[in-house]
Length: 146
Image 1: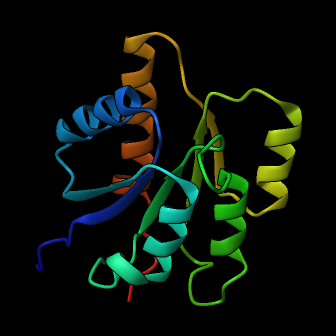
Image 2 (image 1 turned 180 degrees about the vertical axis):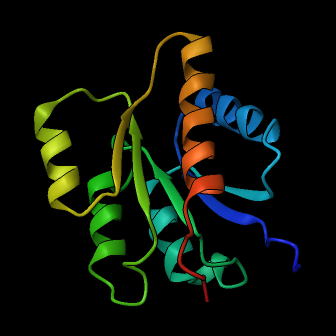
């Protein structure tokens, strides 16, 4: 049996505290994974298109995407991924504090694969990340990244 390649996760998050929480929660995972982080929408687009300083970075298997980002919004990043045929198979999970029905509708209209609201309590935050890991890293088959 061939060992499973680590799941490459791109975390697009501008809040350093949320980045640390997510990295810590993923660190506890038994599933093989690599976490790559960027702090704004422009960097996220450069990363997924593997341009400029990200040319040597791997194509992500999964994107965890905040909506309210500097430079370009999460909705812009979502559109950049889902409108490019070579990238649209990458699952994008909106992981945001926004509870706005407008944001939720826009995310699904933009072909987000899921929309999760960030909890405010630490224990709940770890539960959300555990659910993401369980579903996206263990239960489903992700498309093979080039």
